[in-house]
Length: 317
Image (cartoon, rainbow, N blue to C red):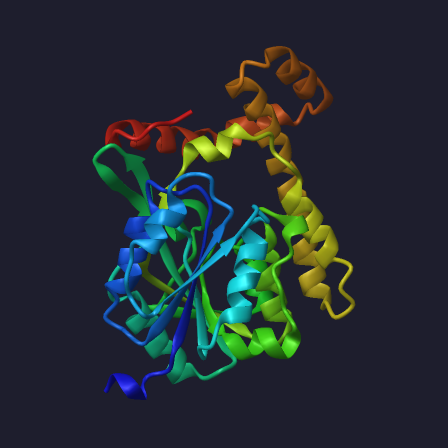
């Protein structure tokens, strides 16, 4: 039966994730859909990540190592060049799949045809000393996506209208090869959002399922350790230069651009506060008087996050 299934190329970029990558790899190996290749690209790790990757002895695992760190987009590009499957599935090296993920999502794709890509909901999880603790559905908490049925289909406009939800999709490899698509490191950490937009503009639609097969690790330390960059702003400005946008798509991108600029202002202000740069925080708030209203608007979800993290035993900053 297994030989009749299509090969799936699972792509996992990795950089200094020695505490997590073993569990991520094992979650792929535990899939009920067993016809896959797992392409792991160690992007110049300086910890024990590479040694852990090498400790797995499974013929389906393809191990690649960059001698120097090139960035997550280039690591994924390396894996895409090596991929041989009909489908490509993305997983981050600190996340976990439930065993039935590939089986459930590939079945839907096979029924729908080759002009779709698919993603499931994320179970947001806090990283605690006792393992992952579930917080809730990403689609519910952050995007309020309304599912009348188990699955819904998004056009590019639908995706933008719902504020471009964070996803880890499965897509046909053929669309990448035919359209010469790559992930663009210069737009990191929003290179994946741009890549998905290019899938839409290549004529594909997105299937979303409300089922949660992907456990997404909330890594607060990494989110707060670096000063925010307006990467999503630059990506949207890049997209707005596309000539084949409809009037609706352009209008929705303009709305998303305004939202991204607000997010950047808020994240910059909170970065200053969290790092004790109070003088810079005050100066920045004076230059951006609308910050107060943005902070007030975000209080409910911010408080919900901090309370949930505390109750789970996860660390927050």
